[in-house]
Picture 1 (spheres, rainbow, N blue to C red):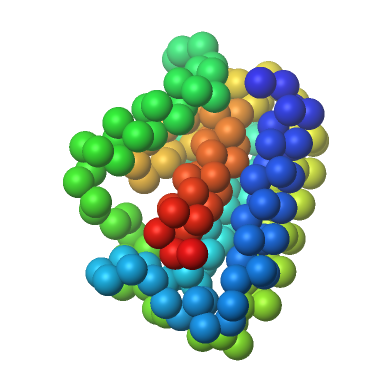
Picture 2 (cartoon, rainbow, N blue to C red):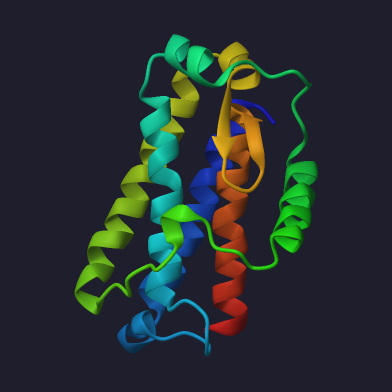
Length: 175
């Protein structure tokens, strides 16, 4: 998937998420199915997922290469990344990873802030995607807590899918 397609995918997925969240009644923000995250926690989780990626992509590329290394395989297609993610989710048996363990329940007062931050972080990621060379997108890797080390291009594609995955959950179980 080329950079322009990835940027468009990010824009579409985040726009759909933000619109859905904005259109939900305010009382839904602090609710969720029994034993599951609230709507607000789902949104906060997505924010907690994109921020470290943007932070990493703010570093000089040579630092990423030194710290995490280079890819040793070709780039996977979007559908392959999605399928692998589902396999890894199944293997993890519902385990929650570091950043989202014991997550606080965001108050309704936090809703506007979280939605604005999601939009801002998405725009940052689109901008960074545009500015990184194709060579670095394909060759430099970053760690993912569930998927392991991934080329940056794949991690950005996964980020777009991650939003879609949580939005589908919200639509199916939280409406």
